[in-house]
Image 1 (tube, rainbow, N blue to C red):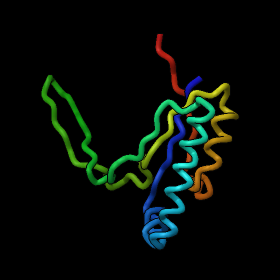
Image 2 (image 1 turned 90 degrees about the vertical axis):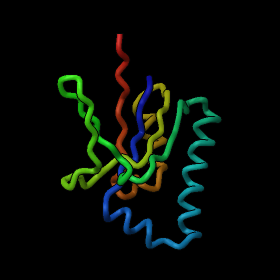
Image 3 (image 1 turned 60 degrees about the vertical axis):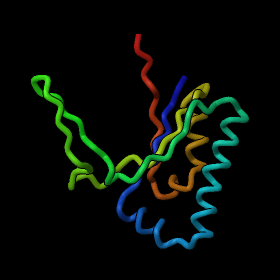
Image 4 (image 1 turned 120 degrees about the vertical axis):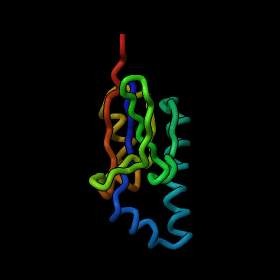
Length: 119
């Protein structure tokens, strides 16, 4: 079954990340590289990506066939998706095992959600 491990970000976590030294940030990136290596070795990684800065977001709306876009994020949004791992694991407990290794899990910013298979 596929599970999406979502890494959230918020202003407090962003400020903490930006306060780290270059070496500390490199250590954080290395934890993610190690995660990719483990998931590739186990055959459970489908895809993983970090997302660009949230200020580059565009919201798309189609009304009466007319497409409009607005800048994002909206002011009321405090948390946003920063990156993800799509994994194919035997069960949610295994996906949670992987998610718990992420440094963001210590900040409560990691979510695991089953992927719905459409007929």
